[in-house]
Image (cartoon, rainbow, N blue to C red; front, top):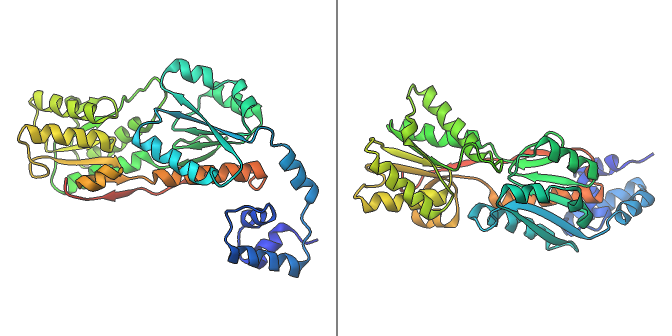
Length: 330
């Protein structure tokens, strides 16, 4: 009996691609589609029409829900852009749920959420034990973006590694008194990015035999104003520093302005590296750790669509690469 795996092998594509062709997905180019159809004809493959029909009938709302924090921040805007790039080409509509307070999280992560959608994308939240139970009991597809859980499909980057790369570079260029501007390390909403970037910084310093001074660590919000205030605070403490690693580009840009106002030259006196690679970072020549924000959204959305179509039946855990980009500030 000819299987979908045989067709994929004959056409030189993945099983998922064959399934997309069978489901008339718009995400397959014409050349690939032609190869798959030729392989189907050559092998005499007959897809399980009943199974495909059942999969389509299970779609009830034609809605994909997205749970995201602070969706006006640059990082989340780019992730949402990536999600929309994919979903806008389908018949699905998007329902956006913004979480900025603990009460919001408790309200949104409830069984009622799944009554309003066919699938769910959760951005940046590390899933708690009780939330995981709710998500699993719903028996609907769930994809995590910018976080990891062994029981749900996940698309993420290694935040610890990214910070390590940045701080290691600063050390290699002769910097020894390295400050750190981050979000709240033990964030009550459960964001783990700042904590993991903190781990990466400490690992790089320890490896180089450099002690970290806690007074050179500012925990604050992810905005230009917060970064500016962090810069002023660092200066006011009177502790020498020759570099700053920031957990976001927005913080780094605000901090850079504060330093320049005080007559501190960047990078001659103080080197600065941010994280994200937002468009302003490129225009201002900010060194940064580039993470594929839009791509994370696109990949996460594609995985969810595959789950909804029954193409993917097991968990997908995909780590996307980071890149250290050196510009004018370091």
